[in-house]
Length: 255
Image (spheres, rainbow, N blue to C red):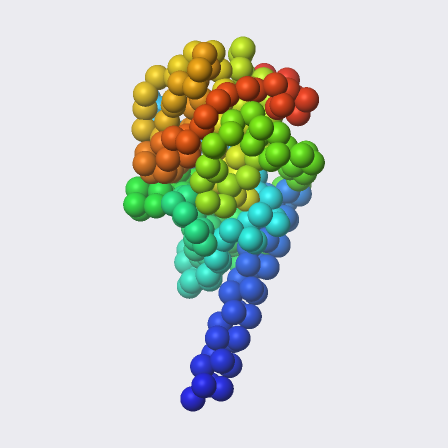
């Protein structure tokens, strides 16, 4: 009986590893080939006046393969129809913490995403994008892989904000100027948070936590439960952004 359970565990582990590899391959291919046609994109977080728009292709997903593999369990479900084509449905679930869960539909023939969905830990829909109609064949695109996180950034963040508790699975990968402050990008390989150190506060809203630390304010913004965002900032003892300055890049002029 013990041997049977061991073999079953190994078999399931191998199957899930294969599911991860399948998703990684599809997301890698999406950097050079995409399905085009008519897509419907709905963004409910962050809230906006007009949450739904149309597009000719799915928005790009920024994925960091090593972090993604470390932080997510990937399980393949059944085959479903998307835009009249057969697609494999994959669920992407964080291994720890309260980060968003994702569903990805991958075309069985083209091996590119046809739809994706992001939901909060409580199941609330945050974002969905799906092709309604597709053209014949895929189109070539150029989407570079995200740059590697700078060496020493995590240590610099610890010096800048001692007592900060990063949400489980998240790590800093970049810094950019934001007005008179700095914004640190945090990711678990798929989900992204913005950590901001600035001289002014931010307006209260769902998915936004802020705390005054000395003369500065520290914000954390992203699709996490409010309690998780607040807990990350609760222990910060001081705010000195200088250690982060050497990692800063100019603000994105076209966010």
